[in-house]
Image 1 (cartoon, rainbow, N blue to C red):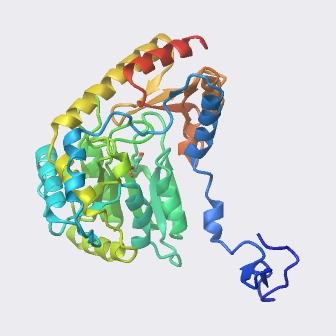
Image 2: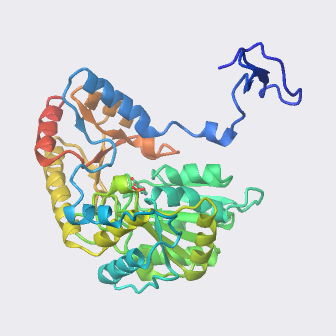
Image 3: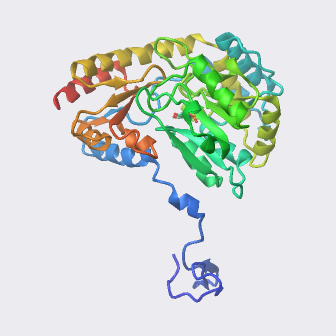
Length: 412
Ligand SMILES: Cc1ncc(COP(=O)(O)O)c(C=O)c1O
C-alpha cells in the first residue's frame, strides 16, 4: 500500500493514482479500477458458512457439516490409478476437444444411460468441472448492448447462473419457484421470453432435489424453440438419485440444446474438475470457438481418469446406495421431528422447511448451536423463494448423520 498523499498521475481519474516509492519504482497509490459488476455480486454463500463452521472447529466443538456439497467418499481406486501413468514426460498443452477416449467414454455412458446417440467428434467437449461452463456460456451468447440479453434461471438455484450472467453483461431473470419447486418455463410471460437469449434448467435441481419429467423437458424445449432461446440444461446430478433415474433433455431434443454433466458427485471427483458439455452440433462449434480464447481445456491426465469414470456404472450405483442410506436416516428423523422435506427426489440434497417462527437463516443459526451446519435457503436465491428452507447436503457418513440427528433432537 502506497502513501495516500501521492500525486495524481492523471487528472482524468482520481481513483487511479501513481507515485514513486522510496526505491524509485512507480506504483499505485489507491486501488486499481475494478469491474463494478464484480463488486455488485453478493459474497459467495459458502464463504460465510465456512467461517462459522471454522469458528466452531476452532472452539473444539463437534461439527456435523451438511453445508458445502462436497462428498467425502473416496474416489474409486481404478479412477485414481489412471492419473499417474497418463502424465506424459513432456506434458504439452491440452486441446479444447481433448483426446477421443474421454469423449467416447462419455457418449458410451449417454447411450447406456439414456439410449441417446451423440457424435463424440462434434457434439462433446470435456470441461474443467461444470461450474466453469455455467459461468462462461453467457459470454458466447450475450450481447450486453442488446435489449434481448436476458438469461432465465431457476430461483432458488445454483448461484453461478446469476453470477455468469451478470459478469457477461446479461440481464438476470430469476424464475421464482415454489410449491414442488419444479421450473415451469411455459408459465413465463411472453414479454420475458421475447427478451431472453438463454435459459437454464437444472434437473435434478440444486438446492431442492426437484426433478423435471420427460414431458416437462419437452414443453421446456418447445418454448425455447418457439422463442429462439438457447436451452442450457445443467444435469450435473444426472446419476445422483434415490429411487428413479431422472430423464435428460438430450432424450427429448438436441437442436438448440446444450447439456452439462459432471463427475464431481457421480464419481467423487470434485477436486479433479471434470465435466462434459454436449449438445447441438452447430452450437458446439461456437462452444469450441469460445473455449479456445481462454484455453479452457482439462489436463490430459484428468481426461484419462474421466474416461475411466464414464466407462463404469457400478461405482456410481454404489455411491447412490451410500447417499440413500444417509438420506433414510435423516428423512426418518425429520418425519419424527415434524419437519417437512419438500421435493428432494434426486441430487444429494434434502430441502427442509423450517419450523414456524423461523427463517432459513435463523434456523441455520439455531442448528449451529448444536454443531449442525446447514445452508439457509436464502443462500441460493435472488428472490425470497427460499426464505423458509434449509438445505442439507448428504456429506457426513451414516454414523455422523445419526449423531447429528441426536444433536438436532435436543433442539426440539
Ligand atoms: C447445479 C450445479 N451445477 C453445477 C455445479 C458445479 O459442479 P462441478 O463444477 O463440480 O461439476 C454444481 C455444484 O455444486 C451444482 O450444484
